[in-house]
Length: 339
Image 1 (cartoon, rainbow, N blue to C red):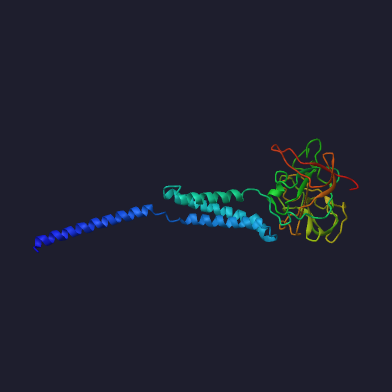
Image 2: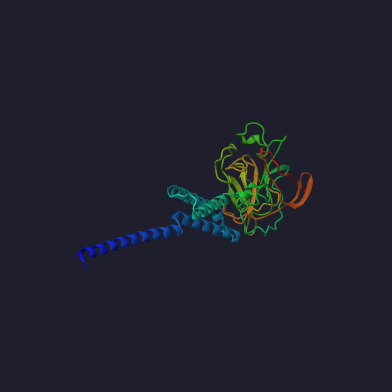
């Protein structure tokens, strides 16, 4: 074969190889473009947060009791919501740098994170393990005379305590209304509120297990002091503890170990502690399964022998409620003597 012919053959082979290489590269690009995108790290993190949140809700739904579900309800939901926000911010940065913004994997991750954040901030009542096991103890209202229920009852619309606080799931706040108002005069003066200084009575016979006194009474609008302020805890049955909180400094008449009878005076209404949901002197009462403040599950209960709106109630749980303008919508209740 002549030299010229050999050169022509080599040139043809090189051109064919180049063409084949170009075709292979084009095919690889085409196949790569059709292949699904590999999941991004932030979308995988979003899935992990979503699964953990679903497991937390399932755990609460089992109503196992104890400290675990309380921690999940109070701290766990918040922690997972913050994680979801962090992953959402991470995803936003990545998505803005790598277009298009809403790829299929990203859309699913965004939906999962939005669901976690939305449900975590929704004020659903704590699923207490005692929900269908109400106390068998007979309770009376812890006051005499007519009082208005600010918060109370089963529904969160009537009882903001139920919407936010596991230990006060069935708690109740009571105030006194005079001439259509719950205060007259200087709103920073506790004495301007007709409930201040009124007697607080034992709602059931029991044994005093906790007495907290010494916190000064202050302006109801100042959020200072402990969560319950001055308070008394009565053990009224095994595993059932009645809390009476925000009492007047120096007014508590019982000591640990005392066994007050039903209706016996315990203290007076005060203005101590952080009164967030009801920023005025009031009777705060609830029933839980431990004497440790803020670490118990609420227990359902009912009160006997009281009048509500002129109607006699043999046994019930008074309901509260506050209107959009701050007007009190709750029941007007009064203990019936001899009941």
